[in-house]
Amino acid sequence: MSGRPPKIEIRGLRKSFGPKQVLNGIDLEVGVGESVVVIGGSGSGKSVMLKCLIGLMEPDAGSIKVDGEELVGMDAAERERVRSKFGMLFQGGALFDSLRVWENVGFGLTAGGGMGRAEAKAIALRKLAALGLGPEVGELWPAELSGGMQKRVALARAIATEPEIILFDEPTTGLDPIMGDVINDLIVKCVRDLGATALSITHDMASARRIAHRIAMIYDGRIIWSGPVAEIDRSGNAHVDQFIHGRAEGPIRMPVRPL
Amino acid sequence: MTALLQPIGRALLSALATTGRLGLFTAQALSHCVRPPFYPRLIGRQMLEIGYYSLPVVGLTAIFTGMVLALQSFTGFTRFNAESAIPNVVVISITRELGPVLAGLMVAGRIGAAMAAEIGTMRVTEQIDALATLSTNPMKYLVAPRLLAGLAMLPLLVLVADVIGVFGGYLVSIYKLGFNPNVYIRNSWNFVEPIDVISGLVKAAVFGFLVALMGCYHGYHSRGGAQGVGTATTNAVVSAAILILTFNYIITELFFAR
Image (cartoon, rainbow over all chains, first blue to last red; front, side, top):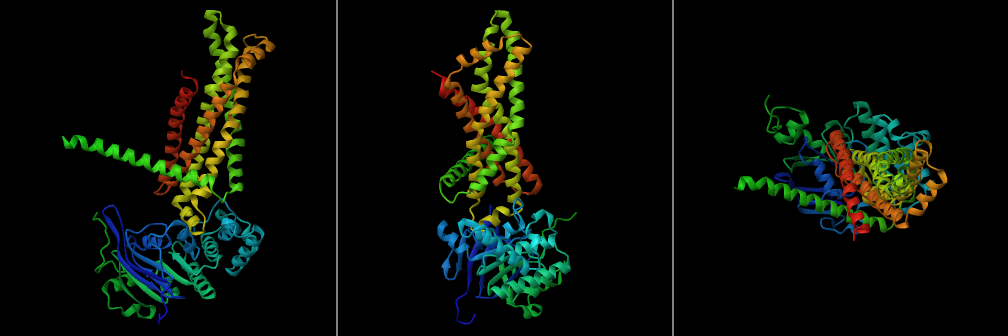
């Protein structure tokens, strides 16, 4: 990030639910066109961080800047404008099951009367084709698709509006390893083609290695390590080592009650 | 002493919090009902679902209610030689009370439950979050069309139910109790006042709004997977039914009490 201001800048982000402190002062920067993957165990606060970033949750304290604009405390209309820079791939796909596949993909285009249905359909089918799905898929309902196809459709929906920033929430969770790799490839391709900035959260190390330029590890509501993907194997951080090798023994203690 | 007061205070606080949340939700939803963009396709679909597809169940409820009303009034009224009042009793009971209340309760079971289940499932599968990320306000897209459709369609549904209910009373009176058809219809028509029907339709509009509001509110705030959606559905129907009966009394009081 030589000289250029970061696309996303998170400083001292805090969020708690009741007595439980989930985010404990997150600091994270994502450069323009960079792909950062945040890794961390279940319940480490990754999802909450993503939700604060896209405005689905309001943080208790801290600052989130996108293109230098402060998002925390922004009014609703302004927030809406900034939010249109984002696309998001949800963990379960979150496709609208009352709409056909092409209507799902074109949803962001027609929203708010932005574009006519015919035009949106043409774009939606083109996006689907780019992800290896034929026009016949566009007429199906989401419930008729396999898990991998749903993920691809959800990816098509996330990139249909050609957002500047794309967020990926556990993109490979629930897929078999081969389909997971297909999705990883598509993510890399989409992000590169759009020239977008990407921020992903995952606990799938294979996926993280494929799609990241830089990896950051979240633990106990803080970023405890971050560095280029090539350096993850010699991070010198015991927490990171334990996580990437998936060991039960180590400094990270899972909150499991003894039987 | 404090141990005794604590649960009371906690219950009171949580009741106040719920009331506040519901009030805020209602105010927000109403403000989205009157501000563009509107979604005519969605409003139309909800109107069809509430108005048209509820016709069979509401019609059946109405016809049997009218029939049993005539039958029961007859057994009571013969003791006082007041059989001739049956058409009046049927038409007044149906238009003022039973039409709107029973239609409201049936729609609460049919539509309120469906709304809570659909919106609740959308909540737990992150579809509501997805709407927000696609520059669409979920309140405007999901809640406002349902409230408007409920408000608009229940009066129409109740108007049909009124006619069918009176017809049910007519059937029993003519074919079982031996009334003269012309006299029955004339009596019904002469006795019923516009205010009877209008008060019933006002109730219907309020009930339609309440059913949709409860369905949307409980669905919107559901959490915790399949069980959460189940709870939301139950709460939507029960709270709608209680509100319907409460508001039925309040509106009756406003219209007819002196």
